[in-house]
Length: 503
Image (cartoon, rainbow, N blue to C red):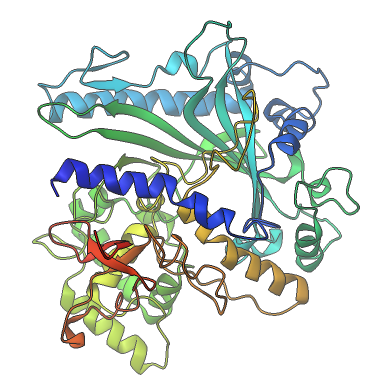
């Protein structure tokens, strides 16, 4: 199969495979962990969870603020300034690295920039597209019992009947809230119980509504994901789309959202350019305690090693590429880690009695370096550059059964998140560990078996070889369900996808 058809087949699998597996479930996998019902989201967006009301709780007007007014709010001005700065730097980098390929707004350019005037327009606003319970992140924010995320999609308003432009635009804004506000007289157990007891369609008018616990006072930060540019397929390149990721932490004293380092977004360029910082990062990550947290997916890398923004290109394929955030950090002349470093650190951790769940080889270490970052995770089994594109309840016939609101990565993680909620509710120590981004843990449940999330059609797998000793220890369990076979999706990597044997 040539490169382009293979890429198209992969994208088709990633975009469409979620439907049959989800439809087969008697209970939606996101029950208790997310709200994706269109009618519920429409009603919530009309109430206190509309973005302008969350940012300005004193505002009582029924008419939602357009983005031209939202970005004029004092707390939001730094966000606009930071995004504008990222656009300027992106254009400058493009001009320096690809001087023969034009860049600008419109179809006449090789790289078609997002029209940022739409972001700050009087004709657009952010519409609530989903609510996600991230109490599975309590390990990172124990006092606040993890997070609740209000995810908004940039949307055109007041379109004329003959306007062919799509209403939804390729940007999401994630308002991250503390699940438990400071000083709140409620336990994590009680909050988890409320979410698990909430009706399937939503939580409106329900007793002990978990959404009653959150408001403006819970705001922790804003995370943005914007499709900054798109390059259609041409004679010189395959299609490519770049996504800009940013984080802005809320400063309660200054009452502004300030640009902040992104959690675990390793600043590759800065590390590779600074030998001292590189050595410090290597020593920190390979320390046995940090290595175990890294293996389990619960590591919190110190901010001195992190970047304040990231570009996540898609698609990246399955072979090593400089489009991946960890590229060059393992192996190579100026790498931060050698294979010998990793092998020695893994051996030391095991000899210290620490059990590793995912990383059992240098290749596993390298893959975790990718998917622990924001951009690397977004490149894994996403819908383009999004893991939660959200529900379009403004459509004439909104449906989250015919239009999947999130990626296979998102749905494959719901069983783990729900298991953590149950443990929190019942007062048991939660297991916060997670598998690799493209291969979730079963966690003692067979709910994912046979689905595209785990080992069904379209799932990520590892091409086995004989003798078995030649199979990488980090991925040898990545097999396919009966009737399917793992087919490599790249020229080098043995990571592939499960397809029918007759293909």
